[in-house]
Image 1 (cartoon, rainbow, N blue to C red):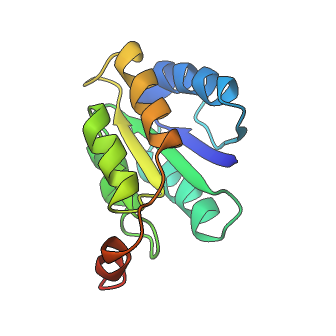
Image 2 (image 1 turned 180 degrees about the vertical axis):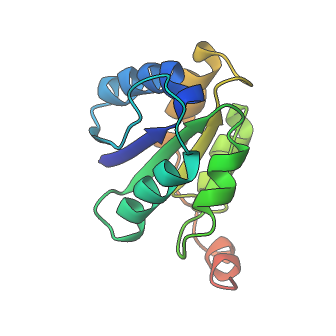
Length: 140
């Protein structure tokens, strides 16, 4: 599966960890940056990753900033994007199964690399359940 990923300066180290998990799982990666700790504007990266998902060029995306809040707010402004901010595995699983989330947002200053790896594995291996959940998604 092709996965877009992006981060701001606060998420660069965690992004590198997530990249290794995605590679381990065998996914094709479209890295939209950033690539240094120099200060950048997170909405630029949220828009870049979200656009790739919205246009179908990538099946899903992962966005990382300090808390994950800014990235999730920016991504959810894009039509067709369902970005979920997850700090543990249960929310990650439910965001896919019940909400068909197509972007996972992570907070690098909120969770550590070990937890992030487990969240990404859970999110990437969970599937949308459909049924009554599709009806609810169709409502917005």
